[in-house]
Length: 493
Image (cartoon, rainbow, N blue to C red; front, side):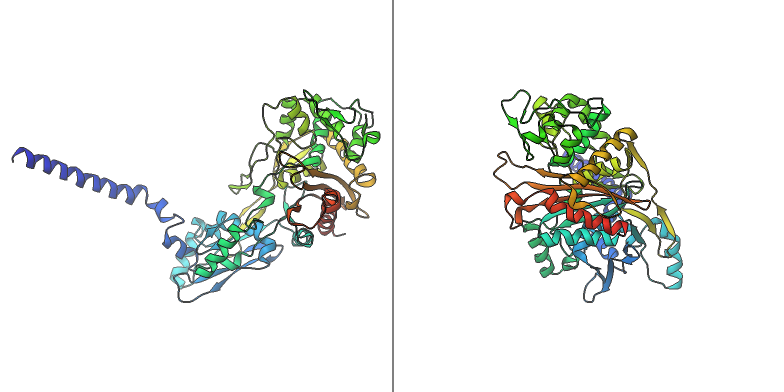
């Protein structure tokens, strides 16, 4: 064989070898990832080949399946009270994919989980169709309805989170404006247009505000500042007068920060009085004295700077809230009143409130109580888990004392409920470089205790779309009535 032919033969041999290597790589190494890839049409066909299992709230299914004809997808997902429960269920669309619980537990709901293998084999023999399992949530339907009604009545962008302090169960998870996952559950052009309209909507109905968006928490963060000051010995007596003048001179700055309650009330006020009237100066001063490092350490014990993650079920529940590192003195002081570069999800502020109501113990939040098979057998069950001892019991009880005083005698009175021990804190958070350019956010956090039961609530309101004057925007006026209705729903009052 002459030299050119030999080179061509070698080259062709290498091509054949490369082809064989690639074919074997795909067949034996990449086969499973490709077979299960979300863009693999066979995967999508399998997901909707049989009725999906249900997501359960209370004792009722809030999802369903409907038979369809003329398509490879034999069943289409349906949702009951879709807009109210969308932040919990997510969507399951033949064209747009899946999100939240529908995505995380797709193998259970579609009946393709490996734990169903024996049942699948049995069904093949008996001719029974494949059946999906169920996801049992911790959501309290009455609390969810109360939160959703409160926000929709205001016609506000916002969020409500309710937690059971001593277990971490998520009792309510509301986001408004919301969407109905049923309207784009299929794969028609019309449904695709509806989904794109939701994507382009300036009010962001697809956004999950309680879990996946962060905002400055404003004065609701003062409960954490108070806890940090008490825990680190900066404050020992909540009734003792402070030396924080009002208006307060921001460290290393010519700026002075006042309070809505006025200098006469806030000047050198005690921490208890400062909580009652939401005096900025006392909390700016407290954060400055605690210092950036200790403030950040305390915030992290309450869950800041880490994703909220459910280890048992392998699900990221909420994105991280941020208490920045390497803050200068003015930046540290500003975090004391929940401003500056500090950001929080509504879930995070509910966690802070729940931990303080639970004597300093922060429980791991979770939204899935059980996973069940098609025969209703329990596959997994979540159990309460201590996430951290955020602060000592003594510190937590002193903050409870101040929050309950604020509910009885201060800015949180709209949350009071007869026969219930209520603690609360209002918040109005400025946003934008020039705080007068945009309307502020409204916040309210509270807890209620009665008859051996307890609940912690965080309400967030973005009044951008509301017909309301700037002076009427406050967490106490807008958020407290919603928190009250949620607490009443949980506690049966």
